Amino acid sequence: MARNPFKPTAGANPPLLVGRDVLVEEFLESIEDGPGAPGRITIFTGPRGIGKTVMLNTVAERVQSDHQWLVIDETATTGFVNRLTAASRVLLDPEAATRRRVKAVTLPAQLGGFELSDDPARPIGLREAAGALARRCEENGTGLLVTLDEVHSSSRDELRQFATAVQHLIREDREIAVAFAGLPAAVTELLNDEVTTFLRRAERHVLSDVPLAEASRALAETITANGRRIDPDALAVAARATGGYPFMIQLVGYQVWRKASGDHIDAEAARVGVEAARARLGSLVHETALAELSGVDRAFLSAMAHDDGPSRLQAIAGRLGKGLNYVSVYRARLLEAGMIAAAGRGKVDFAIPFLREYLREHAPE
Ligand SMILES: Nc1ncnc2c1ncn2[C@@H]1O[C@H](COP(=O)(O)OP(=O)(O)OP(=O)(O)O)[C@@H](O)[C@H]1O
Ligand SMILES: [Mg+2]
Image (cartoon, rainbow, N blue to C red; front, side, top):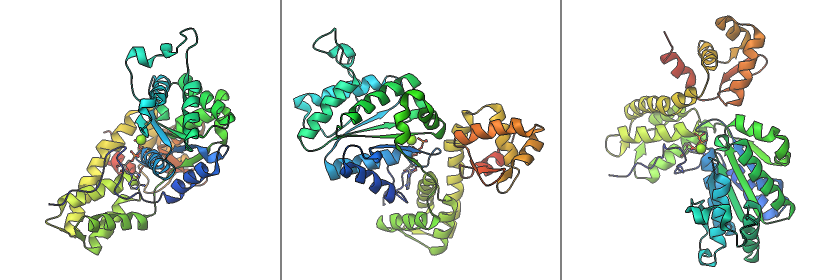
């Protein structure tokens, strides 16, 4: 039996990348344009499951395959600056010259710390290690790309260290590029930080849902390319259920594929598959996102869930029994957290698909 081609897993590359061609091409252009091109520092942001990590994966793969650049992938959890420094040093080792890409490695203490320097009194930091590595790349006609995921999990201090090192390397006209990804609140904070102001000139892309027609085409192509067929009415049901939300494209595709009998996906398989996908979305995305919020944030969202479309702030304030000023504070917080989006004057709407339905089903008594 044919393997299920869909990838409903955080960070897993989808069988077809929907709706992001322009962004990928823009990033590649900045590599061609040379040092100083603004796109060489790019920040991808947007709500959970929108495809930030996948964008980093994609630009990394393309920069590597089309331009033979060296790529270091890191996640901004504690100690990432040290790990990047260590990875740069490992790659500087001539024996590592054949490696084209590393997940920044955690080295044993005697190799990983700053005391690696030949002169223990002068520790080698990220700026020097990455600078030396970029020069090595330049000698070979290429450059160095660092991808940094989950900027929201970093301490401000480490981000500052990293950004400062990058700023120096950019000033020195090194062949270097950095692609960041993180949730909107953390990205806003990073851009507002007075130490890392140069990042305000970076390209910032807020990823959003993709057009339904493109989601539909991707579902159909993936299914047929993997040896099954789907009825037009089944495809319509499946595509509509994705809402154009990238994570849901994979979840729906995966579940609809599973529910098929044999190689034929009919409307019934699509209906049951969509139901299963919605349930999974709740436990994988909504629960996690809600768990990080305060009680008032959640009450705000539950008050929104009474409406079938965008909610008026006035109405939310009324339902919560609070004033407009109070409600505005939480509106700002939830906007930054990527949970809601502005929807015209005095109105907000959910930013994560099916969150409304989830909240209705899981309303506190
Ligand atoms: N452009 C796309 N087309 C189709 N599927 C996609 C696309 N982008 C992401 N996906 C799928 O959506 C899911 C989530 O992607 P990803 O993990 O990159 O999201 P994220 O924004 O990094 O989420 P988080 O905020 O939780 O880190 C994965 O299953 C991935 O395969
Ligand atoms: Mg991610």
